[in-house]
Image 1 (cartoon, one colour):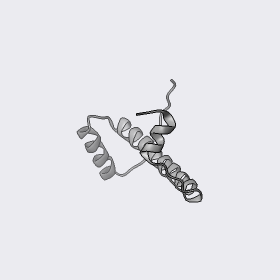
Image 2 (spheres, helix red, strand yellow; image 1 turned 180 degrees about the vertical axis):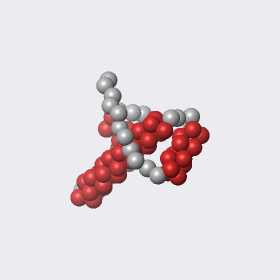
Image 3 (cartoon, rainbow, N blue to C red; image 1 turned 120 degrees about the horizontal axis):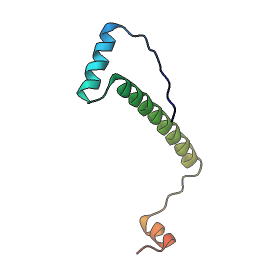
Image 4 (tube, one colour; image 1 turned 120 degrees about the vertical axis):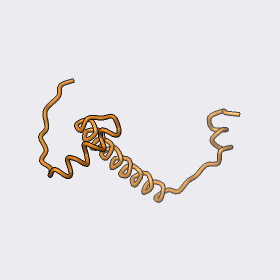
Length: 76
């Protein structure tokens, strides 16, 4: 896996806050910022997927009981 360097400007109070929070979590600032950004992206994707699934359900609101699902898949 290759990596790259990323430079970010922030004021001193922001840097201090992020550094202290990262340290409390046992992470470097870089680890914390990267994991936080990736978590945010994952959350946004999850929300998008939920909206798509909700729209699909709203267009055809079919539900199945647990007994119907068990019968379909041969589970007792």
